[in-house]
Image (cartoon, helix red, strand yellow):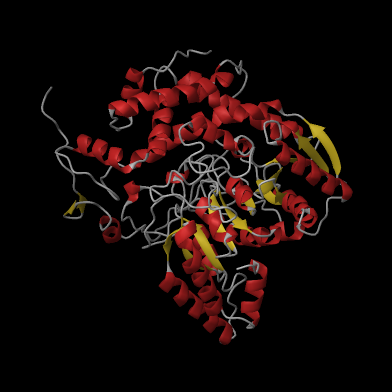
Length: 102
Length: 474
């Protein structure tokens, strides 16, 4: 089951990109060592034969939870918008979304 | 404040003391010592005084002020109060004021309790010492050169320093029980689904649970009776089947089968093992049957937890993108703004866990890490449930060591994570557990013993906890 190999700094950089984080060269080095040691600890479960067990995502088996379709108070729009870094005409305002073609 | 929740509430209700004087004493205690201990990130001086006046007016007018009348309560700063800054110990929530209040706080206030402030924590509840707070660590009142534990360290300090008789924390892998043990308090992690998570900022949604810190087992039962119960706003909240915690306090342990669990002891310091064995003797003297039991699967909890919790965190913390609330570091386009905001706003431990979770969930590693951890979670839960066919509760250590020094475990995250070895399995199973103070170690630092019970049998914890409390070394 174990597909482990030592974590590389290239992988750490790739994961940081997926997680929308920027790392300094020094951080890449530190995190590579630290994350590698945490993943190495997980070797004790990576090698277990757990084929017969159902993955467990939650303590209790919960089915979909429904409520009656009745109108109830919701959060105040103005109060929510007051927390935003930038707002324009009752909308969250951000910078450019589409970049130049690569 | 050494008075219990029970004493304060009954005296305020009967008019022999006022809520105003109680709050004043609490604020004075905070002012006297919290520059040093740093339990609080925010003290709501005016709000607490105003709430006290309302409680006292109710008493004077002959109206019922509620079962927790005038009781000052401290709140971990990942619990939302509408209009009051909530930081989660992070710079990324800088200036954020939640637009709603957590259900637990609504319930406490409806019962007459008075929120007095927000307490320090490891950033987004990720840590075991409060050293990961963006606002600096809290200090252990028993020895300010030691950590108070974490992540709910500020809440533990607030009670242990005598500021308040009760504080709320959240426990994802031990974040209530570990600081309770380090600070000499009762710490209770309820069955998953017993306490609404509405208004608790999410870390790992399938593991997080809110619970109290108190000086006594009875106070923990009283507070929990108020905060437990179904909440339509939390779809994981259990609809029914809540046990009677207060009624369990006087039940005794005669005939109860207590599993003294080697896998909740091995790896703990000798002085802690000795205290757990002494606790077993107290229970035996009270009529319990002590049964030695091994559950080797529990040892796998640490690895499973440190894949599952970061995986859920990496998803939950994706919402901090600089768009709708909190910090924004402006850049020309949105993607660069997201990256700049998150890079500036999150501390090292949060980044570590987000990356670990992202990695465990990424294509090629999902089955080997996340999937395997989910199966291990099932394995551990099955093993615990199997153990509960031969014993009623389990007894073990809460922590492998007593409170450690600042900086001792910062450079090596894995050594910090080992603090959670004995507390993690119950979170994975969704079961309840209680840490009860049981004497001190050689250096005078408190030691906690831990009781574990099957899901929804939280009453057993209080049944056993009350006996242990009576028999604990002075």
